[in-house]
Image: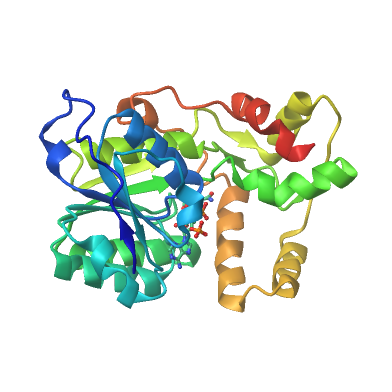
Length: 300
Ligand SMILES: NC(=O)c1ccc[n+]([C@@H]2O[C@H](COP(=O)([O-])OP(=O)(O)OC[C@H]3O[C@@H](n4cnc5c(N)ncnc54)[C@H](OP(=O)(O)O)[C@@H]3O)[C@@H](O)[C@H]2O)c1
């Protein structure tokens, strides 16, 4: 593993609290939450380290940021990245990677883990179950912890709907009439930034949502308005969606888990709105309308 220390000028913001002296390691720094978190930590004047596979993806971060090269699938590449770290930001949903990373973190003296989990973490199946097992592992290993549990993130729809909106002015999704309050990764990052840099977030579970719940049909209408063209929405039967995922190559246990997630969406089980982004992240959560305006080029 290589590590490059890029900062020389120390703290840029002398108003930070005492936790400014605790070194933070950000994993998933090039992902949808992580890259926003990196930007917000830099804006806040915090010194931190990122763990990335490819240094070329994190150029120009400036002198507050150390870059460590490593791969979560290769535990032997993680030790140097963890050196001197007090707080770890954990994004991966992969239990093997989480186990390996936490093992190295424990050995290295990491104290506090801020984990991206999911609003479904109390469910007994699917992604909720997997994230809950990771939360339990973090607790059992004796780390201080903060669990961030986002609902569906707005950015998913680029992957889910981008191609068919571009090519057919159409969205195919098994959403039924269920409602969900999608959240912007920027807002998840704002809460993560608070949890990593302020002192009173240990032992807290934060459920993160956007400001308003919509049906999938309503979301499609809002996207269509932002794009200035009609988009046809087809509510795909859940069974057909499952067959499609299996044909796409997803393992059966993953498809069964995702079917649970879709079932919960269709029953509006996570249709409630939380005030965590405002209370902890200290910002108004981004509306879905505003997000569509900002990302409309991804559908054009
Ligand atoms: N999407 C949702 O609606 C939703 C809702 C609730 C919870 N979540 C949870 O949110 C998390 C995903 O967050 P995200 O959307 O920010 O992630 P993301 O955009 O998928 O990014 C994944 C990040 O992990 C890094 N990564 C992947 N494999 C790696 C490896 N082997 N070693 C080192 N780094 C690796 C990627 O780096 P590279 O640039 O090298 O690929 C990237 O920075 C998951 O735990 C998911 O379950 C998602």
